[in-house]
Picture 1 (spheres, rainbow, N blue to C red):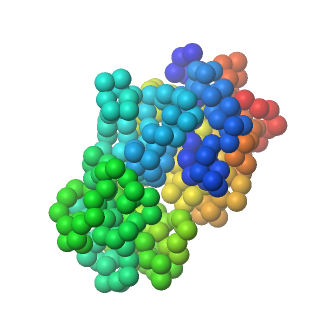
Picture 2: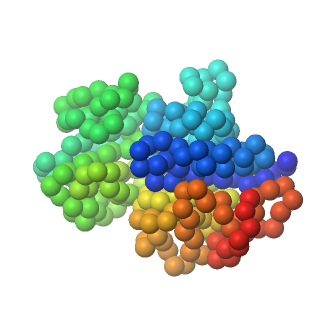
Length: 286
């Protein structure tokens, strides 16, 4: 299959591929494997770090050429000689000092963490998932500010999402927020970096036409990715998606799908070569 025949298929993990119990449903795994084995470039685009993403790739039993992690700030490329089979190809970082010093006074009860260019986390207090990771280090707040990072993560159990957004909006940085069992979880990436920017690097390198990109996701951190895919290809907002109300009306609106019907309504196979738009939802399966 040539680059003009195959599709670039980017899938979010949490809320899209995984069940509420954190595993991959057999029907989802089977469908992903089927499309991957047909020769399409099936890859993951996630807010997770690489350490949290690698087990999902292994569970799906796929070996994509690229993986987009940390909401687009890190793009990894397959490399048989690298740890777990992937090396860091592109990494976007920024100095977190101004972000941290601005947010902390406004959110005094917040718990803070940063992820560095190597995927290691540094956190101030017990942090969901992070404190259990192998590459995680508890440090004083001041130590968070003295390294280049791919992201800043803040949790404040006593403040709502809007309070986070108001602080970040004043700074003019790219912002993404989503709930994860707490009142508010804020993820701040380098300015202008998101899943779509990471995926566009991958698409250009693979030489796949913009009309043959497909993305599925469910969160606010998927908005740019879904709009990027829907513009000329296909974007799928999962059923009950928190991203759907925030999608730009300037782009074709991504349609909704349940996790076991991610690819329903699209034809992605060597014999179907016409570009697909998210406005047109058919009943054909892949």
